[in-house]
Length: 452
Image 1 (tube, helix red, strand yellow):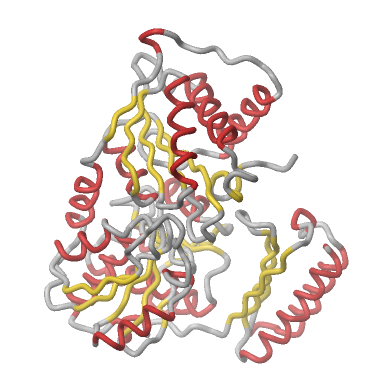
Image 2: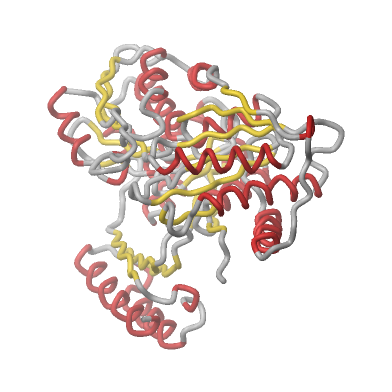
């Protein structure tokens, strides 16, 4: 079988790919692996468990809680909260483990299980591999060692989590947001209560859309993957700008007062300059992935800010930041990590800091985002292909080489297998949008032919 863990935990169609049995088994395996690693040594272990509003999260949460408690781990159930809130509370409460049930920006039928280590950091690959190995051993019949009596875990609700997390967000701001009118699109997701509360406490006048989750409507035509409603609401309400989150609120995209989209690269650029002014951009460096627009790289060079690039996935951005002590990193998709205040991408924090930059500078978001010019970029997702052969197909390598020769120094090509979905992503940048579309279309056909 393929590796269960992708770039962002274990994810699949709930009750088909990701079953209650799997969620329970992975949780027990995680508890045993962390115990083997010495994480629980000398004390009774505790885990924080949260979820987004998906209907399937209800039974998957029950399975995870049952698995952890059966392995002797006490559980604090924090309910529906963003992924970064679970990460923050794992660290703030001194828990040994955090578990988030979410499929982020994916459609409602999907769900996922993501583990956090002590301190709220994502588990390293070797621990995920060990959890998967132990899970497979016991799925095939190897019996677990199970505590009994007082050794089993206890479960309790931790309702203070929301207020504690919102307070943490507001405390991170360098200035208040008074005078700003902001539309918030919560994607009917995990930040539907958190984000409006945080922006309001910080002084902004807010208009909220997509904040009525019913378990079925998460990411449905709203949020960071569908910005049309946000654009309309910004125009309708005469707002200064709009902020959009995804289902688990670990990402943030924006729309300026004219309806122009502001992507993760532009947000990174704005925050990098703001943090440098406050002497908070350590080593004068920002970390981004190879998917970042070439215009972002050129803007950082012009502004004298060093850019370090990593593989795609916020976990790799975070690893680079932690290893070298950098303070800011992120992805074009809107995952932005501000390491002084968060251990993972935090969409609400990102939106708040972006708003604080607008309020503190007296400049519009449109003007601030103009620090970089986005070069035309075309992204095509190619489904139903063998994504494992992207790096080994000679025919595909030849097609890429031909495309790179055509683009020359004015563009670039990137092919990569998705870490969370069964498809290959084809990205092409060029000085001209029509050329980018033409090259991307030919490469997408090449992917289908070579890997189909």
